[in-house]
Length: 335
Length: 268
Picture: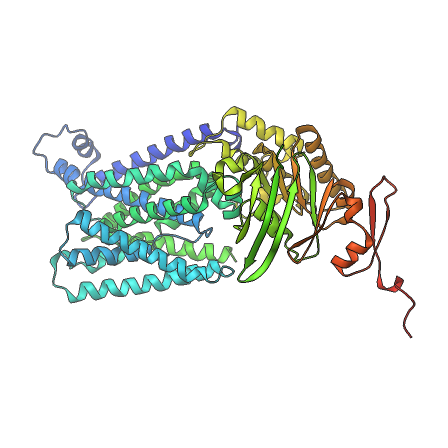
């Protein structure tokens, strides 16, 4: 039986099974690898809680690595899904929250919120959301005037918005003495090290409903790929659906950016890899991007923690080194 | 019985340029209705207005007697299906996936198709003779195959009214006839009302029961082919001489284009 002859339900089942397996493997790796090396026996014992209550390794795994791996998984899933939705909505295979400047906008909002002394939730998150919606509207307005050259002007607009946001971030971080902001690289290159156990639950409560909302709109996303007019002939309320998708996606991207800063290109790499194998159907791609995107960023985070002999590097360095070449490749192919 | 679709004093303009001017039409249920006219006479805009994709500045469209703006998008798509002139083929959906999209107005949000939907898609592909292409990506199809796939998608919506924008343009004669025959067959067998925009006056004469001849956004003449396709009316609208006689196949007009060298004695 070939893949394409399986029914959609069967294919969905396989995607969810393999995706969950991949996520499980990544989580185990994320928990076991780090700057405190240990043999697999000790790791296994600590993972299963057999090593006693005062084991240092168990503390490291469950207090430090676990929240961080969960954060990486959630951020990776969010950014992958964000890229997938933007690519369908804008009918542009190169769209991604980072490339469009949406991530940059929410980072500016988040920093402004932190400087104003707002609480992480809902104050900072709300400003980040406004920042992402603002940049998204700006990019859409810039490109709306010339529908013909939309593909490239969209990217150019995104690059410019992104450059501006980066400058504002550096400016804000430079002029302030605020200790919470001292790490500039955290915002510019993405960093998962501030993961705190208390915020994980809040993140899950915010992001999972967004994932489910987008999953419920999987079929409308397929229709939108055929063009707005065709989608409306097939009974879709295009304006309403697009608005819901833009708001939900901006919301979840800004929540992710608040926690992790600007992790670039995840939304470009992950959807493209899955599209090669699974085809264009969003009913398969959405679960694949959530599970696979989560796994991808957990793995990238492991690499960024394990590779340097001292300290660690921002995870955005790894994702950019993978993603930027792929972006160039896709750009060359789209001509 | 109310008309399947009617337009009342439609007025549409783009950027201040009027495209439809005070246009009225009425298509009886079960009719094969063909809209003809020169380039940029507003045929496609009229079709899009009948489909609800263009909001007229004045006037309105009624579907079975009910104003089109009173329909929810989904319930309109269960009644009216559209075959547009151009479709996106850059996304690697397969033929079957595209045809199944026609089931969308009948499905919920996440919309997993049931066996019944697959059956209907298979039937639609059989009727339009594209079932052997089910697993092919859309971008590998020829023009005639693509047109039949899009018609299959429209049939999958189980509509009562089918709107087509130049479905035979850029097709060879065999494919033109097969599409027109298919429309005539669907009309006869399922009582489908067919409204089509066409450039081909002879196909319009042979298949259309009612024609609408448009010029500069206005309805110039409408009625059965024998009334609309006269040389005076055609010359007035198209601005070129045409020879109209009886088609040897039956009692419909036949239109022949007249090259310049046949018009009057050569100069000089």
